[in-house]
Image 1 (tube, helix red, strand yellow):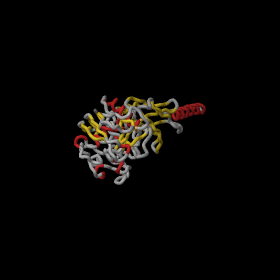
Image 2: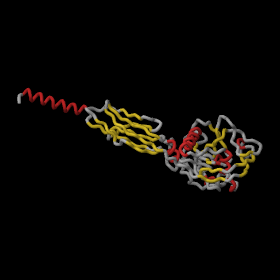
Image 3: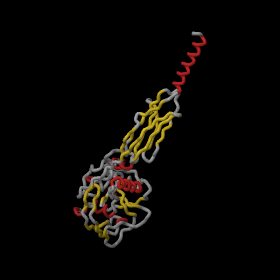
Image 4: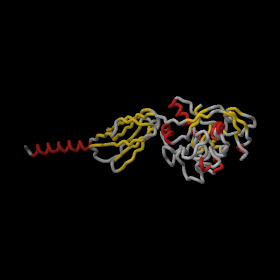
Amino acid sequence: MTVVGVIIITSLLLSVVVSCKKSSIIKLNKTELSLNVGDTYTLIAIEKGKSEWTARNWSTSNSDIVDINVFCDFDGEKCTVTAKSGGTATITVSRGENSAKCTIIVILQPVEPEMVFVEGGTFMMGSDNNILEQPIHQVTISSFNIAKYQVTQKEWKSIMGNNPCYTQGDDLPIYEITWNDANEYVTRLNEATGKNYRLPTEAEWEYAARGGKESTGNKYSGSNNVNLVAWYTANCGEIQPVGSKAANELGIYDMSGNVWECCSDWYGNYPQTPQTDPQGPISGTYRIIRGGGYNSYSDWCRVAMRFRVEPDNIISSPGDCGLRLVLP
């Protein structure tokens, strides 16, 4: 073989090697993935034959279904996928003309609350403790079911696909939400279950907190000793697991303390006359919250205590707010 022939063959071989180095094949560690709402999973991009490092492009076909967060570590470039709502989305990673896809199927599996039946009856609502709780007036309430516990972070994540809480745990109550957030959760839960959950009216809330027909007339929900039934500023410094204090007469937990609870009513002054299943004013500026919280004074944990908040503001005072559900 001539010298010219050797040079030509060598040049061809080098061209092939260089061509291979420039080509790139991207793969993902998963091409199809099933998640529940609130779950997260890390996709890993595996690439062979890249000639130099440049950032890949990651995208989702539906940001309402999944959120993505791209990051790098010693193992390379990765993408954390967080399931937000039921449905299907495609995650695509690409560099130049090369790409790989993963189909994400998000399954909505709502975690529903345990309910307690509250037999209807008549009670005296309000107190002489402060002007917001006056006048004491007679209220008759129809029977209803109320959640045994405050809505937990596990229940919230199963519907909303996120957890806004600073302190997190499945058995901790949801907090750091607005009244509007709570109402949105109820709407989505009903869409997922076909049921008719709602926030309690203020009158329903107080009737249940007092123990309904089983009431023994306690200052707090279940006792005159606040430490037996409530987490509040003097006995804790942060959110506590639901149901970790004593229940009230109906077997309902944390209606005093832990987190404030949203009621459906607009804020308004109490009426003078007897009421039957009152709904509160038809409109207003503020919504009602009840029960006190982990950073509240004991007086704020009384069953008659009422507080008002703007519906679109996260509550910084008097404390963090969560919710409890009612099912007629």
